[in-house]
Image 1 (cartoon, rainbow, N blue to C red):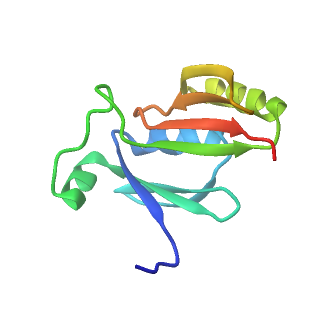
Image 2: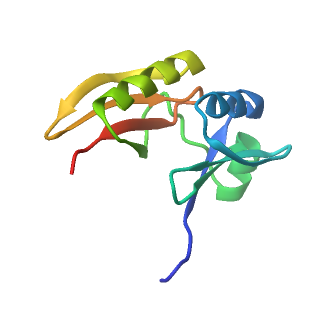
Length: 129
């Protein structure tokens, strides 16, 4: 299967809260309406649409996962240095994110993990070349 683009769709409780959180982190908005808020991530503008849970539930024709019970995906966001990892840690804390993994070394890299207000998980990873 050949495709030009891939993006993610996630369910959220509160669009305004989600919009504020990702805006505070400096991600580029990709549009908002009554059912979703959307942001671009990275140089290639990977898009994540955050749908209100009712609409997301309709789209998947199933129940929305309870992220308090577990998680299926971890998005990794690259950093250019250990210092940048620490700067992003402060930005996430200031935006109201929850840190689930404090900054630490992993093999030759360095990272920390956080979740957004709905429990979607990300890590910020510096991996030297």
